[in-house]
Length: 332
Image 1: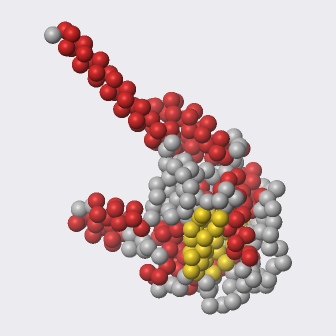
Image 2 (image 1 turned 90 degrees about the vertical axis):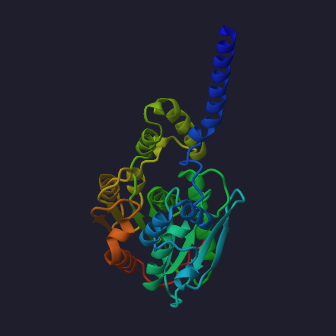
């Protein structure tokens, strides 16, 4: 009997070790590096998993979720970009009727996709802008397995701008970035500089602080084990220490006209961070708007018409409608 107990105890320990080994990859490669694929299949799957009452509630709350611009009556074409490492980033281009219209390139946040920005795209198109939506690498329908907010993704934005500016009808380009992509847009303004304006929604300030908050929420007391692994993986992908991704520092040398949006109640992207980046900005033309009782997920809905109008008015004020000569630029 004692031998049987020892055998079962030993077998149980082996099973626990095997389960832990299988569990480890999802912990050390979390969705901050390997994001969720939020595409039409993902949305349909989530709806199918719900009960009838949940699905009805989902539809009423998320009535702005569509699958492509055609669902909102918009005429569009595919806008696909090849990155420097030969990945394909997939997006849509929605052109305005005015041939002199300026262009907004909309970058979604981490763990999102271009699908979740379709309502914003329609609102900007209705206000007279060309709108480009694209999935970042490892998101939505774009290729890639791993994502980072560092120089690699900034290089992807360079490829997007190259493609946009090859079109002789493209005059000026503004970039709207949300959350982590606000940091990507700001870095692009520093390293590339062809953006004529920025809209930075819910920017973080210190990326190292954001990662620590993420680790605490994901792993709790076990973060002391997994955070060093996450930090090492991120820094390897970003080609820079986490502490060097400080948006106030980047903002202090970015003279691109910038509109900042801050959420009044967000656990990751605080209004204090947004104000710090705004206050450091070297832009002569800049503004900061606080959307009260909002977070990074509902700021658009909470801001409503005033939110959309503020973007349009700022961009129309700071970007003249005339053709520019600079088309291609290598990152320094």
